[in-house]
Amino acid sequence: MVCLGNICRSPLAEGILKSKIDSSRVYVDSAGTGHWHIGDEPDKRSIAVGKKYNIDITAQRGRQFSATDFDNFDLIYVMDNSNMEDVLALAKTDLDKKKVKLILNEIFPGENVDVPDPYFGGDLGFENVFKMLDEACEKIADQL
Ligand code: 4NP
Image (cartoon, rainbow, N blue to C red; front, side, top):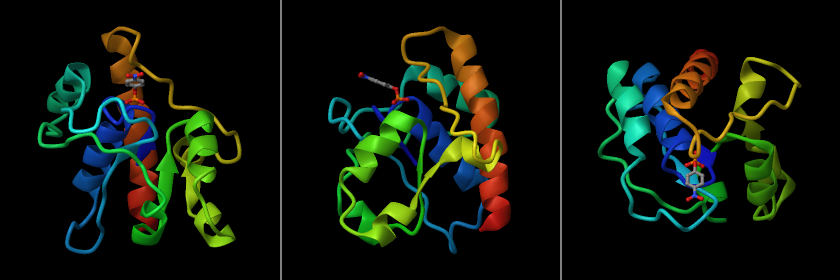
């Protein structure tokens, strides 16, 4: 699960997907394309909306996406089209590129819709992000 900062959207996506899969079978992690929040806790507003729905993301720490992630993961879900560009720029092979998917295409196939970045908005943005990610992760968990 990849976003820009790895403190708002992708930590929620990681926590939500983990809650829907068997962790002995599927490894889920998240990262940001940017470096600003390496080692940081998720944003307090993401922690709060997660807690509201019984998803505890407090143990997560920010890390930056790197080219080696293509070797370690089979599927890479990005939150928006800008994350898609940044991640694809690090791909070395066509196989790498095929691993990258826009997460909301799971629920709106082919529409290339972004998960809006809630960082500069209010709490409602985080609630909306949670709902979108919950629906998308339900689809992903079914496929896994
Ligand atoms: P995220 O939100 O990509 O959903 O984690 C952001 C958090 C922080 C920043 C940008 C986006 N930032 O520029 O610090």
